[in-house]
Length: 418
Image (cartoon, rainbow, N blue to C red):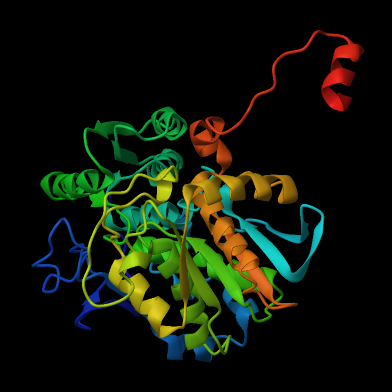
């Protein structure tokens, strides 16, 4: 496949040392200098951030609608938007909820439902952009490590793009996500180990076989793909200020992506202040929020039911931490019990059926709600990142399925009315 000319009006900047790198034919994932001493048991240094010529963009647009008219092409690191998948990625719905279990809410609650993406998760935003860039750079095979959603996303996007996907997953990944990967025609490789071990192995394979690597944070374009939801939230909220956005966190890339999307709008003077972003993790996989204080990092083994955010070593820890501290973000950890309860509350009050990892964000909102931390008439957005059908096994264990009854109205009346 012939290579397409890469853009020369955006660059990668290392978040640690500030060095700049071109989006050049020699693929770069991390800053070579800062990543030289990286260890598998600590978050990597040298993660790259994509910066655009914001001055030039400002001179070429009048307002947000001008950006949207061009498909936000000025803020995406690809040369030809025609290389993006034909699937409808993004433009997912936003729903409003005025009460919980019959009790009116004193604030405005909004659910951004990204389970409506083609493979039913937020990860399609990153996979679509990575796939387009790989096409421009002449790569036919893309490899990724995943707990499930990123893998099924890449598999589906590559099927649409006629690219080859190689997906490494921990052997215990949910069956629904494994089934998706296989049906899309990707090469599935279950690994006897953790997500973090699969992650390192996929990097070795990308170097050995010259495959393009989609791994979260390791590939800087995953952040660029995931930032697009911020622009949609801004528009769907009527371009008004947003008080909080609750985001489920594993590696920290979705969190950084939301920040980056709004940061782009800040740089273009389209918005004047950053929303408060709330990082929500499970108490059983809290390696990002637990390490917010101080300068060190200590990993604990993760064992949460929310598999999509079950991470021992958050790959985007340093960028996510920088964003949270720079822009006055908040963070909270919730129990797995709270997550399961939140999935139920969310489903019966909004009609949105979220997998446990996505329900974690709603659990974060409920935590603030119970603590009285949400101001009246404020606008609170919950980012729901994946469908409950992605991991029905985790939810089934906590549901009581009624016993069958005789097929007559008397039996049914007895069940309904006692």
